[in-house]
Length: 60
Image (cartoon, rainbow, N blue to C red; front, top):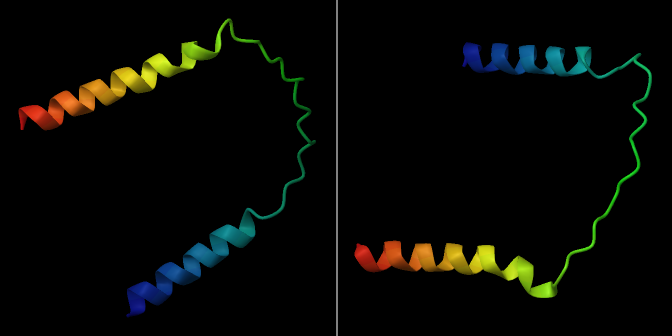
């Protein structure tokens, strides 16, 4: 029980010690979105994963 209380006290002290931040805010770069060539290009990866999972289940 003493170890649990000690661990909780150390966790509370560590979280309150790192709560503040004096560093300058980070300015993020603008997000560039590329358009895809076709709408069906994103379907191949899930289909391949589905086939692999099906093969794994069938082999066991």
